[in-house]
Amino acid sequence: MTRIAPLTPPYPPGIEDALRRWMAPHVAHDPLVLFRVLHRHAELASRMRVLGAGLLAHGELPAADRELVIARTCARSGCEYEWGVHAVVFPELTADELAATVHDGADAPVWSPRQRALVGAVDDLHDTATVSPARWAELAAHLPDTQLLEFLVLTGWYRTISGLANALALPPEPWAARFGDNADHAG
Image 1 (cartoon, helix red, strand yellow):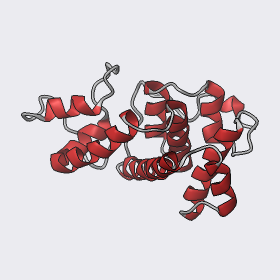
Image 2: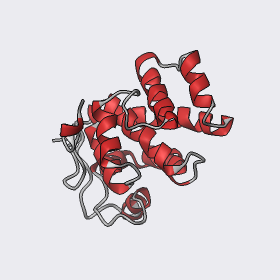
Image 3: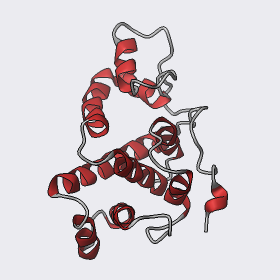
Image 4: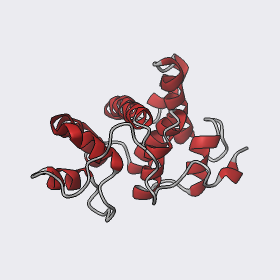
């Protein structure tokens, strides 16, 4: 059970529309538990949505890079909830890549040099709250300054979302992927 109960239908006026705006247009599932909990504080949820939606729908990072960064950030943060939602809703990564975000390091053979740089930089940020000079040079060889900035904000945002979901003790969405899926990939 979550530490703060999510809203349940029927929703207060305006909340139904607000919850639908949080969901990706192609998703037919009910609004996520995370969103329904956040709407206990509708003003805060509204402010958070602007950044979250901007990163998902209007970013410069290619979708596969974005989802790799999100998956690795969530995996390193132990946030199966958000990792599993993105694995299903934004299927940009292969099953082997998804499994590697949970079970392998930046040196996994599944990664291209660009992906290796992204995964390694996420790991640096997770472990030290900075990116080492060597890793920054590796990342900068693949991304222009605008994408470097977006990478940093995206990683920080999903670290925040992971902490929020973990602290709220959110149960996985019933339809979401689980860390154990593809566990046989672990090397």
